Amino acid sequence: MNYLSVKQTSVKWGISVRRVNILCSEGRIPGATKIGFYWAIPADAKKPRDARIKSGKYIKAKPDES
Image (tube, rainbow, N blue to C red):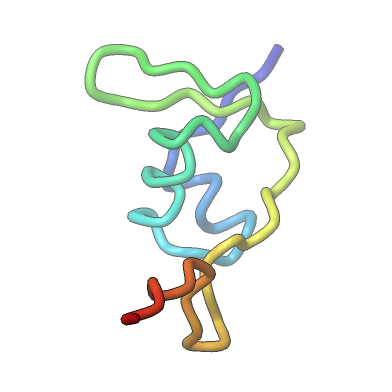
C-alpha cells in the first residue's frame, strides 16, 4: 500500500496542511497512521466530508431560562 505525507495529501485535496493534521488526529481519515511525529495517509483515502458549522448556528440549543 502506498502512503502520502500530510503535505502531499493537502495538495491533492486542495486543503491546508493544518486541516489534514486535524482530520488525522480526529480519526476522520481511515487508515491514517502516525509514525513518530508524522502522519502516513493511504494514497487511496477519500477526502472526508466537511462537518464544520457553516451556518453560524450552533447545534446545541441554549437551555430555557425559566
